Image 1: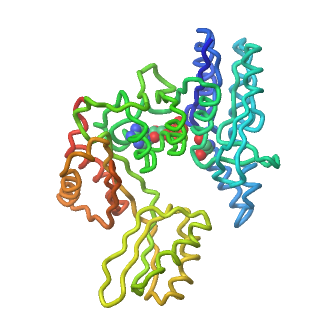
Image 2 (image 1 turned 180 degrees about the vertical axis):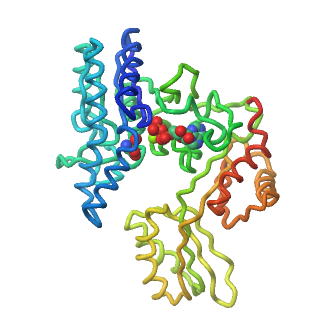
Image 3 (image 1 turned 90 degrees about the vertical axis):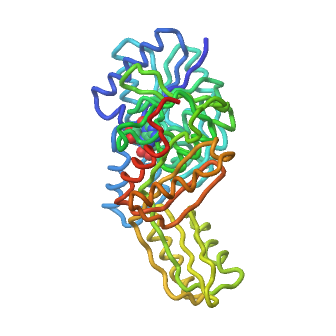
Length: 405
Ligand code: ADP
Ligand code: ASP
Ligand code: MG
C-alpha cells in the first residue's frame, strides 16, 4: 500500500461546508486504498486574525507566545476535519506538529525543521487510520512550540512526504501553477509541469501558491509535488526534478510581489567596509534584504538602495538610521509602496535579449523601473505598486505566454 501526503490550504477549509467537502475528497481517496496523511492550514484568514488580535493586546508580542497562539489555527482545522471524517464513518486521528514528530530549531516565527520522527504516524497508518496533521508548526528539543513562517504548511507536507517516502499533493484554490497570477491576468495559462529550479524562483518572487522553502526542501529530497484544485477534478501542475527540453517558450512565467519596501541611504561616503557595517545588523536581526543597488560614486559619495519586506521596514529603519548617521551619510529614506515584477525561465540563460525586451515592454507601458536584479534564470524589476497589474499583463502579452506550451 502506498502512502500519500495531501495538503489543503486555508481557503479550502474556510468554513464548515468546505471542511466537509475536503473530508469527502479525503474519504473518497481513502476508499481507493491509499494510506493517507493530510496536512491542513488554518481556516480562511484565521492566522491573520490571530496576529491582529495579538497586536491589540501587546505592542510587541513575545515571539514564543506568538508561535503558540498561531499554531492553534492549524489545530482547529485538523480537529474539525477529523471529526468530519468520523461522521462519514472513517477512522481518523488529528496530530499537532509535535505529535507528528516535527522537530525544529528555536527560531520562533521562521523555525527550520531539523528532524522528522514519523513513528507515531506510522503506527496510526498501520492501524488503518487517516492521519490529519496540523501544518505550519513543530517543536524544539526543549518542547517549545514553533511555527515555520507564513505559508509553512507547505513545508510540513513536503517534510512528511520525504520522511514517509510518500507522494505529495498540494490542494488549493487554483487548479495549478499558472504563467501569471490568474487573479490579475485572465489569460494566464496553466502549466502541466515545471522544474524545481523555476518553481523556486517563482515562489521566492511572489508566487505564494507554494512557499519557497518548501520547494527547496522538495528539490533536496526529490519529492515531486502535484499542485491541484481542492474544488474540482481538473488535472494540476507537476513540480519535478527534470527539465522541459521541448518547452517552446523560454519564459515559464511572471511573478509579482507587492510586499516590497525600499530604503535609500543617500550620500554614503565611498570607502571600504560601509556595506558590511550597514547590512550586518540587519542580518543579525533576521531581516532579509532583497534587491540591492549601489550607484557608481560621484565626488566620493554614493547612494545605496535596498528592499525589504514591508513588515520589516520599521525595524530596518530603526537599525539602519543610526548607522547612516555614524558613517556620515547625508540621509536615509524609507518607502513602503514598491512592488516587484519578475520574468522567470530556465531557457533564458542561453538566450540573449530577454532583459532588453522586458525593459522595453515596461517602458512602452510608461512604467518606470527603479531597480533591477537578475539571477541566471530570472530578471526582476522594482516598480511602483500602483503599476504592478499593468506590468504583469503587458509582460504576459509581450512574451506570448497565453499560447500553448
Ligand atoms: P492556500 O490557501 O491553498 O495555501 P494560497 O493563497 O497560499 O493558497 O495560494 C494560492 C493563490 O496563489 C491563488 O489563489 C493565486 O491567486 C495565487 N497565485 C499567484 N501567482 C500564481 C500563479 N502563477 N499560479 C497559481 N496561483 C498563483
Ligand atoms: N496558516 C499559516 C499562514 O497563513 C500557514 C499556512 O497556511 O500554510 O501562513
Ligand atoms: Mg499558502
